[in-house]
Amino acid sequence: MQVFRRASSLVWRVLYEQLLFPLSSYKTFDLVFHPGYVGCLFGAVPQVVTIHDAFAWVRPKEVGRSKVLYWKSLIPRSAQRADRIIADTQVTANDVARFCGVASEKIRVVHLAGGHLSQITPDFGVLRRLGIAEAEYFHCVGIFKDLKNPWRIMKAYERYRTHIGSGRPKDLVMVGHIGGKNGVEVAAAANGRPGVIIGARISDSELAALYLRSAGLVFASLYEGFGLPILEAQRLGCPVITSNLSCMPEVAGTGAILVDPDSDEAISEAMLALHNGKPYDLLAAGERNAARFSWEKASSITCDLFIEVLQQRGL
Image (cartoon, rainbow, N blue to C red):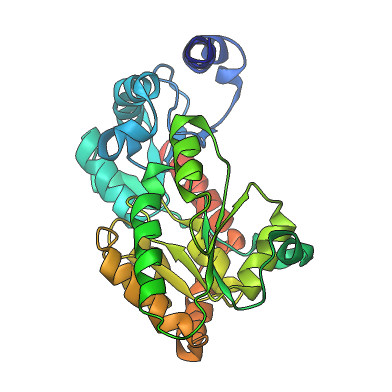
């Protein structure tokens, strides 16, 4: 039944974006911006489309068969039809050019930003609720998916604990939505492991508190279109451990410990490097890096791109 509902909603999306919308008010616009991967395949109105990642090609199992079929069928055609394409990172831009057969000159990189959590009041009550102490835990965000590498991270955490010796190991807090069969399996495997605490889904104010008091974010993901948690952590003064592949080095800059996500030894060594306290040179580098990204900058570049398209069309 759940599969049917998903397929049904996807069918309605295609009907709306490719038929109902173009036949209704579409022609009245000077330009149409599609922020969700796919634009209209027909019509003469200028279009800008944002393609956030290449999941359909790089990690198809993460999105399911129906969405892979939808994306692989429509994203390339939509990209070829669009006047300009926005990609969240240069890595995604390269993937779009390769998988969709469009010229790289047509694609503009517009980085996201991660300052939203620094603008809300943190709820430190989450530490009491989870039974954790300041600077005595690492944390993972959105970890209950294979993409986020939970099995390797849990193995790395076990390895970290064995190398602490006589000292007290820090906890590992796993937060995020526990959904689907995979999420339930990860949560079941994590439950009862020494030092592992399942925080499940928490509010933004609680997440901000976790970043502010954490010994480090462990974000050794296998693939990302951007990787917002990296910037969230850097903006809030939390050390970052992240992967040395996909777009994560592009987003993290020099403000993170980069590791091979397929190596539990590399991930555990990064945890050990942060065990005795926050390395302030890494935090300073993270703060400088995060300052490169802002929603104001992203919106300004996007608006300039709209104007550029309209001018080229003579509108």
